[in-house]
Length: 176
Image (cartoon, rainbow, N blue to C red; front, side, top):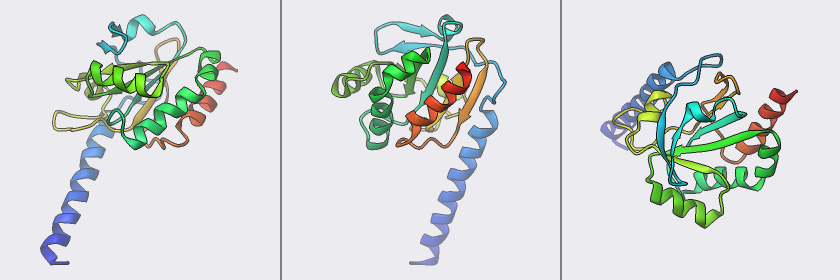
């Protein structure tokens, strides 16, 4: 491998790490009030976060793209234990840059029982520090918001295979 190729690889990794660090600096932290937003939802409505706050805990999970391997694993993990999430009084909201139509197809294909939000202009992802204007995809990050509208958990390094179990553990701790 040439020196030029190695240098470009190191620069690419450095840029990616720098970009992630910029997002992390803007990301709301545990204890912060959850930033409010309005966005098109897969059920044909416009979801306003303020209208959901107070009804129970909210899982707001950002993911890169509908119908890709990691995102499908993550969504299906939540789907497979969705009754437990309902029993823990949690509303699940998935967010990506995909369109409402893409979300509807993803939901139908995998029989997802929760709403997906179409953040096509990246405004919600930017508000939560998981993307910027140059991002092709949102970072895989999850926020748990309590009934009072406060962020009580942030996972900036979601593992799609274990995500659902981790969230149930967090929610179980909130209901005690």
